[in-house]
Image (cartoon, rainbow, N blue to C red):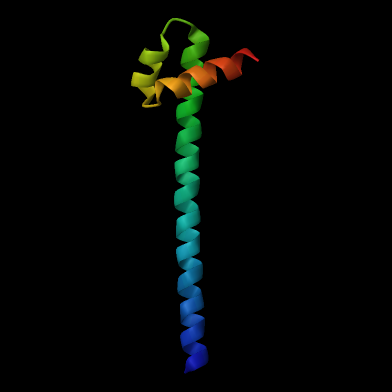
Length: 72
C-alpha cells in the first residue's frame, strides 16, 4: 500500500514537472517569436522604437537593446 502510494505520488510529480516544462517552453518560444518580429521590424528601418514596442508588446528599452544587438 505504501509503495503504491509512493508510486502514484511520483507519477503525479513527474506529470506536474512535464506540464511545467511544456508551459515554460511555450512561454520561451512565444518570447523568441516576439523578439524575432521586433528584429524584423527593426530591419525595415521605418518604425521608431516606440512604434515597434507598441506593435510587439515589448518595452521600449527592450527594443533599444535589440537595435544595439543587431548593429553588432
